Image 1 (cartoon, rainbow, N blue to C red):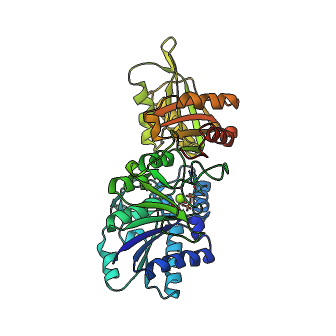
Image 2 (image 1 turned 180 degrees about the horizontal axis):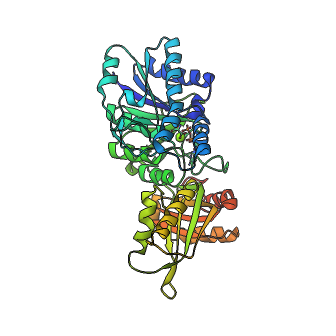
Image 3 (image 1 turned 120 degrees about the vertical axis):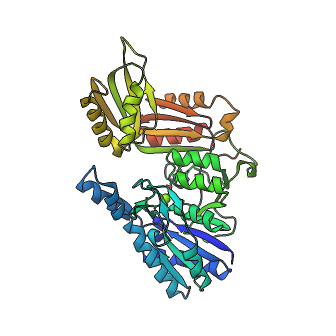
Length: 412
Ligand code: ADP
Ligand code: ASP
Ligand code: MG
């Protein structure tokens, strides 16, 4: 039978009523003749609550136990969804990551999927099961411990299952009706895109647009999964939502197609480090060993052999970063006068494949921010994106101003 993957995010399974509504959507596809693999997230807010508990006990928690705790949200919704489907007389069974088993790396809290054997689930389909409900976000390490795939990881579970089982399509049901030019919660001028290229979606996701987890887009691109984002709250037609697809499938496109933001960034500066060969390695190796995800890096011009080194990382990794750098200082690997953390910054990015061939985007971005009186703290660019670090209090204003400046409310 043809197979679909349908993923329901947290708000789509936030309570029993919503689970029923989602189950009805699944029932519609089953009635059309599809076997379905349903991937569920935890109920809205649940993962945050679980993470909060772990962090309350220890900011430097053991990641294996973090995974043991935070994976539980998905275990609950998988079981509840299976019961709901059974109530509707749809033969369904739930699967936790380890039961599939979805094998991942041992990188706890940020594990990558290594393998999804299809035989267990396919055997059940062979026995008449019509829906396999799989707990998203979780897997099992080669050591046999529960792992999780990073926040938003159920999207990645969904795409990986679609690839492994050769699904006709992977539908991501969420609380917005598609991918927009920016987060529709920030400006009501945000425009829904009918299609978006893999490359652009990849950048937007990695720069903070949490509508899809970055890794899910990477996998969809690599395995050519037909990936669609749509609302679980509206009646759906076959062309609803946004299709994430190859660039060649898209006829018209603006130079800039999206503005992304990432709220919880921090900027850290090492004041007066010796400017000598190997200093960057001496700073960033311990950070990497401590699991700090360094993003932007700026090294100042040196004066009298000393320089300042600035980098950005997620806000909740500042404690880890400080610990790693102070330890490296104690060991004598690096020497700095001061370590300053600015935890009140946000990153704003403009993304568009049109930037490859059109210049002037950076200038327009900087002028727009200047006109709003917003100071830029750090800049970084790549082929199809420009990112800036600014004070967090101006984040919404910056997104709205850039959305206007690049006329994203209008079709190309
Ligand atoms: P789910 O729980 O269904 O996985 P998420 O909260 O992870 O949902 O992702 C959906 C949210 O992503 C939306 O509610 C929206 O606020 C946010 N978002 C950010 N950027 C965008 C964008 N460009 N297009 C659509 N939604 C976006
Ligand atoms: N529940 C997890 C999270 O909130 C995974 C997901 O929803 O995709 O990050
Ligand atoms: Mg999500």
